[in-house]
Image (tube, rainbow, N blue to C red; front, side, top):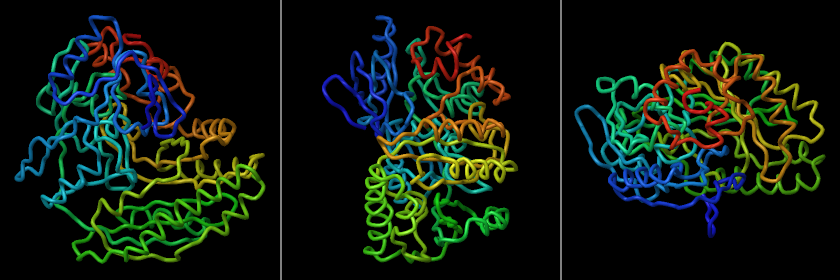
Length: 437
């Protein structure tokens, strides 16, 4: 997230806004005060954590609530393995707090600098066919409604609100605190290697179901996919040596890759040849604390679109992307990332009601992306695709509502908690419709 006088910009730099005020609360009464002042003046309110969403979900011309000073660990219940944190805590901070208490989050995405609230609000996920997204681990929440009321919700207290607010798309209120169900700390036995993509596709069900966590990155213009297989274990950690981790994650995955993209912007025709020459560390095998395996540094900024399709539709959906890439006038430089998660019961989760496969595509900042992303979106539409709420897409509420069987449950909660649209903005108006519509 970057700021300059009067302007807020997101991590990727593709979204910006000029809020009337930027508030940096340090307590819940201050959160309530922001909402009360804004409502009295007829202004809107949006919260921002790390600013990692690629959409304008956090943009506003009203009050922008910066949660960077609102990220404390409030309570730990060792017996229940539950922790309560303020909404602005980063996932990295949460992971460190949990590790110190021999706890962990069951499943995580690959970005650790997001805020817990932002990751939950957009249904951020990791990979693992038997595991659900982060939002599914939330067992209690406290949010500030459009009336300035601090409302507690859980499976036993206002369960209708809790059910929807776990993936609230920033439209139900300001999240104040979240209570997260954790598990005993565990390590991951990781195996990372390149394999022919057609071979991976033929063995896909065995790879997805035979590993606790599996993902693949197909390299456009090549026949190769980078694969990551993780098995949960209590074996002692055997991490990579520090220089190996630096070489792989910084030099190869970020610096060498970033150099390829810069050259590719000037000479797109060179991208396939350059992709084949990016240094490779070969097969990697190590054991490390779970969050250190799940998360990776992201030094190269990019734009991203990600679609969720039913897992049973993954193969034809992926092949549609491969066909599109082969027809593109400008070669694609970024890998196509594919992950797999269990279905959940959250109305607006992208995995709601179905086991899910995710297909994510990326472009470099400043590179043309409209043709590529529009083509991917058209392909995903054929498979009942649901776009990630925090990543670029072009869909509206009219197109999205039929893809979520519990859409109206969410809309009823929204109409109750925010009838005046205090937490709305042009993005929520587009993807959810106006409040009460």
